[in-house]
Length: 167
Image (cartoon, rainbow, N blue to C red):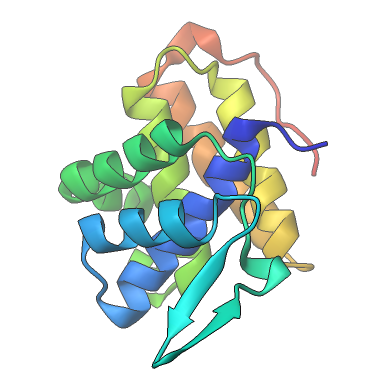
C-alpha cells in the first residue's frame, strides 16, 4: 500500500506536468487535485454533465499538504532549481530539452533536497526514482538517480552515503 507522501509525490509530478503543458495556474491545479483526485469517491464536472474521474488519475490517500508544499516550493524556487539541474545534465543537454514528465520529477526531487531537511536525502532520491519507474521503462530512472544524487551531495553533504545506487 503506497504511503500518503509517496502518493503526494506522484500527484505533484502530474500536477507540475499539467502546469507545464497546459499553463494551469498553481492555485487552480492544487484545488483541482484536492477536489477531484484525492477524495475516495471523486466526481468531476465536465461541461454540463458529471462523470467519475478515471481511476488511473485518482490519488486517494495523498498527503494533500505535502503535495501543496511541493508544488508551491517548486514554483517559488524554480529559478534556483533549473540551473542546478542543468549543471548535472550531460554536456549539450538543457532542462528545457528533457521530457516534460522527467523535468517535473527532477524539479520536485531537487525541491525536496534543498528545502525539506526533514526528508532524508536518500529517501527523497529513492522516492523520485520510484516515480520515474511509474512513468518510464528506459533510462529515465537512472537519470533521476544520477542528477538527484549529485545535487544531494552538493546541498546535503554528509547526509548522503558514498557510492552510487543501482536502479
